[in-house]
Amino acid sequence: MATYLITGAAGFIGSSLARAVLKQRDQVRGIDNFSTGKRENIEEILDQIDFREVDLLDLDALHSVCQGVDYIFHEAAIPSVPKSVLDPLGSNRANVDGTVHLLIAAKDAKVKRVVYAASSSAYGDTPTLPKHEEMVANPLSPYAVAKLAGEYYMKSFYRCYGLETVSLRYFNIFGPRQDPTSPYSGVLAKFITQMLKGQAPTIFGDGTQSRDFTYIENVISANLLAAKAPASEAAGRVFNVATGTRVDLNETFQLLKKLTGYEGQVNYGPERAGDVKHSLADLSRTQGHLGYRPVVNFEEGLRRTVEWYREQAQGAESCSNQASVSRS
Ligand code: UD1
Image (cartoon, rainbow, N blue to C red; front, side, top):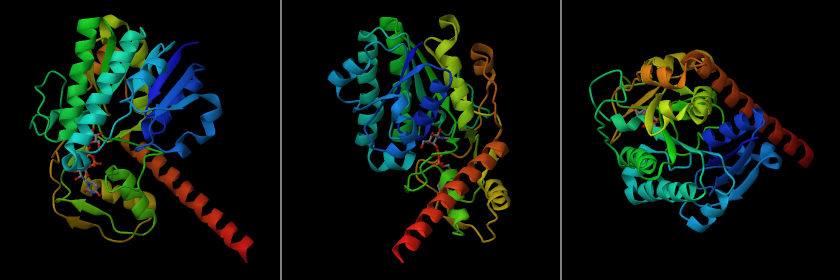
């Protein structure tokens, strides 16, 4: 039985990975500082994992957390383009300094491999589509720069210290447990929850911007493959994780109308600073080296995600009805 350390274990992606590792009957150690993660995401699995509230900037704590660990899935981050534009120092501290701290602790503890949550934002506004890993990076936002710096550190720790590292460039991940409540939340989590409540979502710009929106199960699959792929195929490398299809926001809104039953309009607002216009992944390297294939397509992922948020909303409503009945 292997031990996996998941950083950002109480976050959207980390908590889903924790469930997947438990399902394959390996051990999970999880850390989170709850800056964006939520205890409720791991509540039902807390008794099955070794969870510790630890900040990535605490090197002593990381040294102890990494003892006995075989693999690390490094998901902890402050994951937002607009937030990083407002607070580049905060983004750098969490996303770069935190990553270097973790790598040092992983190297000292002789961890077998670190799989890192890199970002498609590294490609920035390069006009070429689809984006392939050989392209020169062109990060636009401080977030994109920080995530790319993390990739370079991954490579550097492999080359300088022989610590096996793999960087997975995630393309706009969505699915159950993604937080819809922050102004910095991913667009799909926001739109779905707004439309289920009958509220009009706002598209920033004209809605022709497109994304390779990727359902969470694809990310889980890519991480599990990246942990176990032969070092000759994976170590020190960068891979796209996506579906290889793209959809624009106007089309997405129409699809969501069908899935949510929302009948109102969409608002249009100013374009967002640091926004990338189009994003689409070339998956040939990920397929060739890791054996990755998308397991759930965009529309099916969207359907499952809408259902999940609908159930959450119904659960919350029935709780509040019970509370008002018991009060009266
Ligand atoms: C970027 C990265 C992604 C990374 C994420 C972390 C790219 C192509 N993608 O996502 O890999 O995981 O940062 O935060 O760089 N929008 C609206 N209305 C809203 C919210 C957003 O129209 O209420 C628009 C945005 O302007 C953008 C699109 O929706 O054009 C997607 O935005 P968002 O979900 O925030 O993700 P990215 O910034 O694309």
